Image (cartoon, rainbow, N blue to C red; front, side):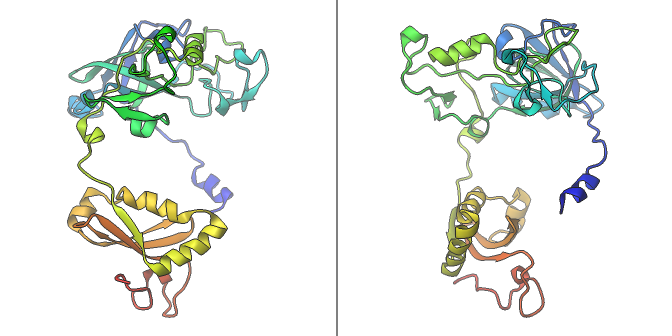
Length: 338
């Protein structure tokens, strides 16, 4: 699909329904912290609406197994409707930079993102620490924080099954840390403006406290551990072993010379088993086809041995001699057991 076709397809407003609202001690935008880690001692509360779910407390089951969560919310106090491609963060002393290189709240889609610590869950309400939003902020979504997916740093798991972020091993007690002291989570989200009258965009970087911690390798004042439930840290589902038939491997070597390592891409996708639980249970050991980078990939799962064999990789649109697309042909294609 070309660019203009995509523009025509998406040329409409996307409507999102808030699932609840946030209660904080900041009635106005003035002096609202720009990042969650700046105000860890202040507590906020999320209240879910009962018209979104019949039993909103049911939607929170399992969230208490995590220590942190992401809050996606709407910058509902933005007065200006004028969207600028470049903004002027005070840290740049008047110089302008692209809005997507900052955390300015004035964005084409005014969506905020905060990483906060979950203090407790009571019915359909969540109490959290790390307030950086104004009172009454509409909540769009909640997602648990999972270090394996959300943090690019190296991770270790301690004996209590708690996820922990590690420094480079050179921190010391004099620097405020130790080799065994975990690095706490740093909250992320576009900052709120420092006052009700906005002359320039709010700073796009972390606060001075964060910068000092990075320079000295000292831990920030936050929770000591990141906790995740066992079904995340010790998943009962192991990775699959991915193999390729000799002919496919030869084709992939040729494709990779032109387009990059597509063999690695296919392996990464299949070893995590992209099938839904429904498909895996209903059609065990079944054939599976997907489209990636303009190529149809056909494979067969063996759920008993936890393996998957790729037996065909063809360019999308390639026609077989029998008149159907080659990836759909079961007559002239390579046998599965090759």
